[in-house]
Length: 130
Image (tube, rainbow, N blue to C red; front, side):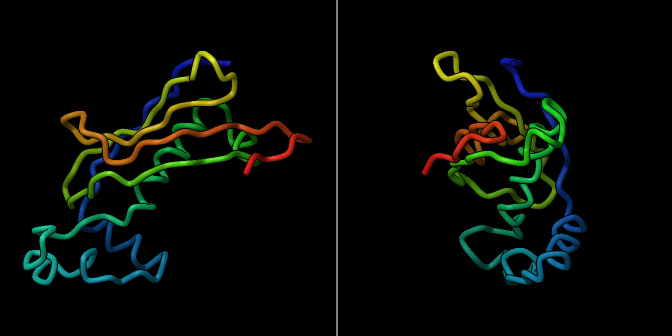
């Protein structure tokens, strides 16, 4: 197996956030109302956390193919919000002592971690861990 996941990047615009709100029916004003969000500690609209997680899936699919994603264990933490207009990159590295297990992340343009965690690809016929 490969030791480095293919990196996937995108600049998340307010239009992307609004479209994601439509797709998920999540219209929390922190995501879609710039005036409301500006008056909060966030200081402006932020992307849905799961929008960023989608880049991790893309990184895994580009590296291993979509079929590899049929079974997996994902354990991540959301560390910081992504503001509209931010460039993000998802990727990861294989863990040397755990074949099939990868450290995954989503980072901002400055390399700051927004999401961090691990994923284990589970082969067909193997039980998923708890």
